Length: 98
Image 1 (cartoon, helix red, strand yellow):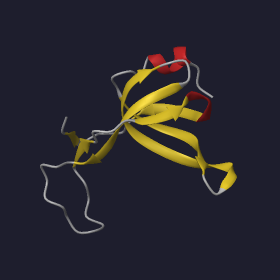
Image 2: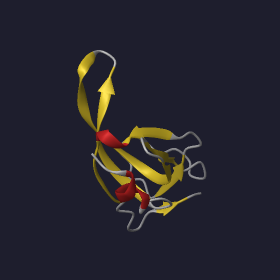
Image 3: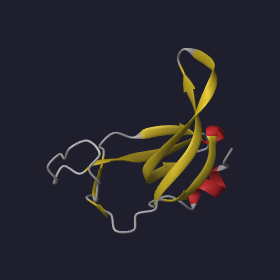
Image 4: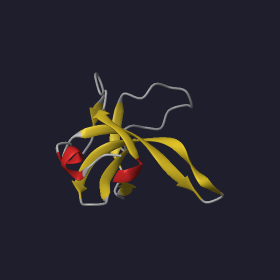
């Protein structure tokens, strides 16, 4: 679990989250990862603008390396109590189209 005060320092940063995601078919949660820009925090949720493939790059073949990312339009709302770890996204050599 991450507290709002701990998560607040990541607002505006590109991060990777390790968290536990609820599934519809089971009462148990499964490990999940998400990455993108932290938009805001409230008492209950972290709001993330997730990474996606850059629209300025032609789609490659499956398995081709990705050197440019974009950001999706929709937000991902992640419960703070499900977040295990937040860390800076390892973007060395990676461009992000905003």
